[in-house]
Each structure stands twice: as C-alpha cells, then as structure tokens.
Image (tube, rainbow over all chains, first blue to last red; front, side, top):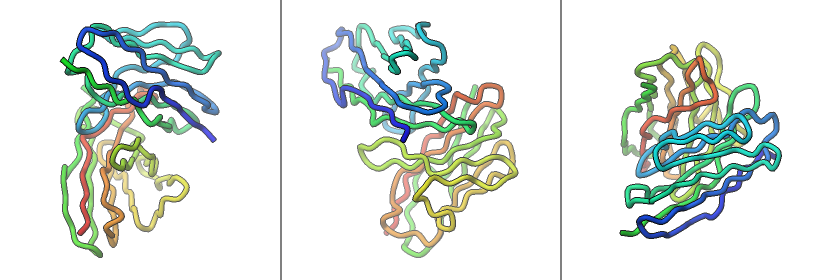
Length: 111
Length: 116
C-alpha cells in the first residue's frame, strides 16, 4: 500500500528559528513529490520535486528530494508567525497522477 | 494563474436531501479533477478522480451512487452528495491538474458541508 509519512506531526518554534520538516514515502510508480501549505482552507502549492538532489527555493522556503532514500525535506529559515500552518507532502503515483497525502506537520511559530 | 474555485463555500442541509458542489478551473483547462474529503485534524482523503467526458474513478470504500461526480467540460466538475446524512458532514476539496504539467494539482478553497 502506498504511504507517505511526515515528521514531526507538530512543531512549535519561535520567530527567527529555522525548521526542517520531513517526508518519507513508499509509493509505487512514483512520479513526483509535492509540498503544500494549508492554513484555514484548502492547501496552497509550494513545490513539486521530481529529480533527486535538486533543491527548489522560494524565498525562505526550500525543498529537496532524495529518490534513493525515498524522502524529502522542507526547510523554512527565519520563520515568521505567518508561517504557522499545516505543511502537507504528497506523493504522485500511477498513470492518473493521484496524490497520496501524509498526515501533515502542524507548525506553530510564536512571536 | 492556476486558480480553482468552488461553490458553495459553505452549505447546511437536512438529512435526506442532496447537495451539489461545483469545482471550476478559472484560467486553465483541466483534463483531470480530483475530489477529496478532509475530516478535522486529518489529512486529505482522495475520493475520486474525474476525467473530462468519462466516468469518474472512485477510491475503494467510496460509494459512487452516493457521491455522484460529473465532469462535463474541461473547466467544470461537480460532486453531488445524494441523500445526505450527518456522517457526510465534512470539508470537501477539489483539485485540478494543468494539462501541460499534470503532476501539479491546484486546490479549490473547499466546501464545508454540514448535514443536520
């Protein structure tokens, strides 16, 4: 059974801290891994990772995929209170591009 | 770009009635749309995959006669919850894939359904 496991499940930090969120996966016919940020409503897209070892960056956020070890990390530097959210990773698999989501990491950034 | 809308954002209905939720890709064409359900403090659970012009593919355990999905055009998919019961109360989210880059899915804002 395909699965995606995220850790930690929750994390509380102070503004300015750097955090690393983890995502490991066991997905057959793997195509890519996606990261999303979910605040009060639906998830918003952050990154799509298809190739191993290539870091993707967007401002203070960055992510990288290791297809050999089957995991990905999402880094957030100089965290701000606005970064507080649930961060979801999802594996894309199969010919219909289905997403299998992890349970998410609840990040709380305190001032 | 890549905006997906859902309507309504919130609906309250009585047990036994049917509710239709619309999902639209506003600025792109989506051959494939997905419907998810999310319970409080839980991750998204894929309910079905909807391809334009063909029947939806339902995930195991999802009743296709209860959750009717129609994907009539490249920009519109609908989910109808038939004969709703209180246990159907949930947050329903759709997503759509860009034709040119099918791995990326863009999510609608979600619909909060409450069945009384």
